[in-house]
Length: 342
Image (cartoon, rainbow, N blue to C red):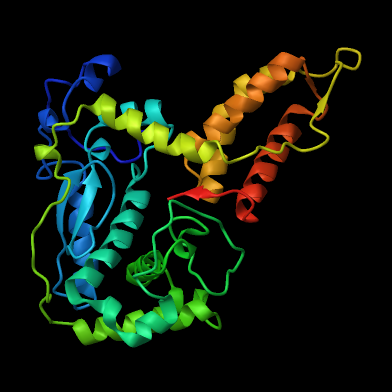
């Protein structure tokens, strides 16, 4: 799972620490650096893609606890766990996913954050045509959002519905599709409302070619080297935030999934099914919907406890049951019935 973006790694004194010991470290004690790291080639690739469009803009990059581009800052924060395999292992153990580990996903996120950063650098949110097509940046940011099935108005980039979460996310997702040299957006979105958004970005970026940013600040909010929090405190807070979403969601399994007896011993215990398939189901549903894997895992934990107490059996064949569960839970999210964590 963590082998798709590999390169030589600098040696750190904490590499062989247990998870418990790592949790006691302060972020600033990690002493991570961008130069020479496994992320440096991907940051350079982002600059190459911007330059290929005639843009002089180069967002500055720093290490923090999450992916983000702060309001008003023309730069990009990259999370610490992408800078070393041991930290990625800890992230997966604690939250069941490592957002941006593969080279492809890392570039997707860098292009997305570059959309926020260039917006900040040139004040593009003040342009009336941008406001008309994308909406107002002043709209309140949600903690959660619901997916709406509308393949006409929004691009699909990080996940099927993230562009719907907020006008600024719509902008960043659309910018990322525009910037990707392999997106073929003119053909893919021709005839859709999203095409007008892509054309506007194309026009605006053409007007910025060769121009220096209006905002040139090099602020680095949340810089890891100044962060005295212990890693354990960070993970505790993040799990609590995600659990607040988990408590609002009800998992609806397919109606024909279970039965109360083994039917002549030919059927599997539902408990065995969940113990075996929960990780794969969680990852697949998270990938399809954009729902955080931690939230999906907690939902499935709840279901595992339920079938264990009732001693249920699978009514469907094992693989058919797996596909039915993935389809049901994904549909619940993608039909807008379940909120998605921002």
